Figure 1 (cartoon, rainbow, N blue to C red):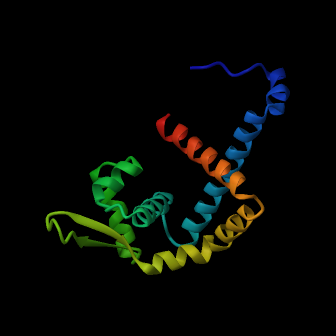
Figure 2 (tube, helix red, strand yellow):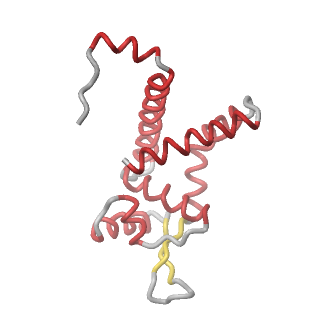
Figure 3 (cartoon, helix red, strand yellow):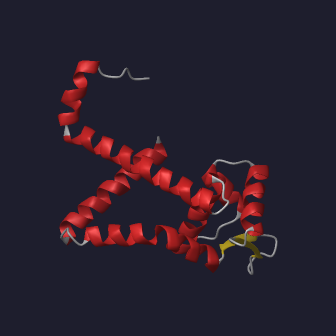
Length: 159
């Protein structure tokens, strides 16, 4: 475990570009978490349900089959916890279980279009604003931003 820097070093660290980015990323993460909590509360969802929907939407976007097992792994849940999440989302009409047409023993999880619509109604304005913000940067800057965020994501998921 690393020792935090001395208190007087905080101002020195805040002048470092890397530390400023760390603080900005932390601030963005906190605000996105708060936004997710408000969404969950407004729609009778547990925060884990929201994370599950995001995982399932990401799987659909990349063409990756989503099973209860893969969802549980992504969420860090055991089988019973995963079943409880899927049951809640299914009862609310956000997710449905379908048999895999190639392997009838396997169950696939699909996000219902109503959940997508619900998510866009809440997060859509922010998504549109972020996409518009990217228009302020040229393609080289956009590639740098994307590479940086991808590298940060790798650092977080490997840590």
